[in-house]
Image (tube, rainbow, N blue to C red; front, side):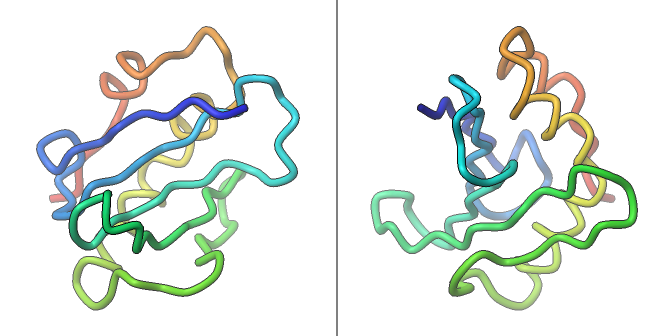
Amino acid sequence: MFGMANLRPEDTGVDVLLHAYKDIDLHARHGPRIKAYPGKYTDGRATVFSVPTRDGVPVEVVGRATVRGKQFRAVVEFIEMNWRPLVLYWYNPDYGQDDLLADLIQPD
């Protein structure tokens, strides 16, 4: 089962809606991920990005990229800057959306 934090552009400095996922029951078959929506989230055309679990591991796209160009680079930069709180959100049941939002660093 997954929980989710809705990360809006005003929270992230990135011009797309992001969803950070939380592994609530610790049974996920993959690691932490972020979904980025180039339009409305109801369109369902998200790009899924893996979140590195340690320094030096690159961000990867899982599947097909629907976010392109400047927005794509901004999402990657955001994840690279915030991988630690995103991983903490994924794994720690006591670390909620408010904690995550408080710890995020926005790109310049």
